[in-house]
Image 1 (tube, one colour):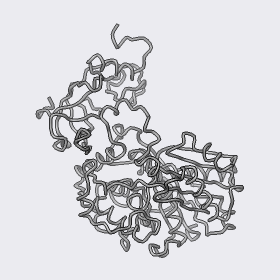
Image 2 (tube, each protein chain N blue to C red):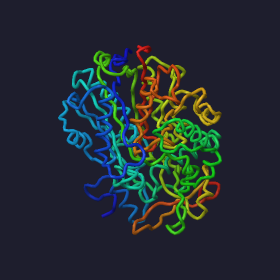
Image 3 (cartoon, each protein chain N blue to C red):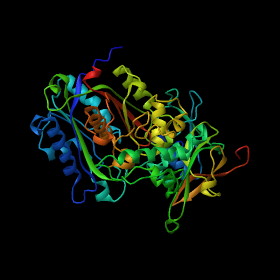
Image 4 (cartoon, each protein chain N blue to C red):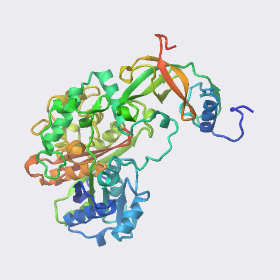
Length: 132
Length: 385
């Protein structure tokens, strides 16, 4: 049985089940073609209730960013960012692999799956000009 | 359309209690002290209260908690929780209840001991599971406001110096308010040089964390005229919201204050140019910039320059947060009710050294969550009816 045909589970559970299987997917409305994030039982654009779970390209652009300042004894500063995916939806995440203060609005980034406290989460790294 | 609520109800009592530090006092005691003082201000007693409007950072069932504590069994109760915006939109709900005969005396009450009890910002939703955001450790609420500030700076060229001016002006007003928690002089250099909390906001771009409570009492206009103080009429009031989680905010630099402001001004039959005193929920300095834009005091994108030229200071063109606001007067978790209390005091002429002479129209604006819920009230003296 795959994540997608698991019986009687909502889109939230489906999303996190895919992530736990290290297979990041987001719902795409069969009615209007809109990607939907965060997952919903109804498409916010057209009201459609049927979705395909598709693998995002991973390409994104930083929409906004901040550095959460923290004492080094507590783990130091870290980045929180909102990333616009190429699919047209926005996700909260962080940009790694670069100083948190060097993350810029408009920066192209690429998604990567990471482990955090036993969960699989989506993070981003700086990317080349095409977002890859 | 005709807005039948304009001027039909009025604020007849307004008071604060335990602003600043109140170790040894519970949130219920602080709320009750605020209610007692607001009723005394109106010349009424708890026996007169038959409508209760409560919100709390601490109680899951605020109307039940405060009703029980006050020893009242109201005919009409309401406990809308839309964050710090709640007490402002509750004036609309109170006006609807009063005008429909569901109650005759409405008490809106708030109290918190978050500074003394928790030692840090206390959030009623702190334990809420937000699985799409939780892994990224968003420092709530400041990190959201910081990302709106960053985007506003990126899109419109707003500067940190312009944001700092909001804090400087607030401190100048606070210096004239005996109730204000921080009254020492503050310069832009102080703000910019303070500890960075979430870029681009320093600790002086952030509101205070204090204890304190506030309450207001409302009646229908006919009864208001027979009470102790000059009534302050509710001319317009409206709200709106765009999201719950910050990552779901449709546009990081535009809030539902566009909608709440438009409706409240339409109901009141007024324009921003006719407002004498403006009290806007300043959780962070960026609030002043974005909310003044959204409320129509200046075009979108020009808020930085608008606030940056000193017009918010005492003696400036736009008397703004004349009590010192959340930045310098008080911020016990939710500021909404304090914006109204200061508007009422200004319109009554009770503000002493910081009084804006001849003020007849006041605006009180609440903000909840991370720019999530916005509520706008327009208040006026008898001259505005």
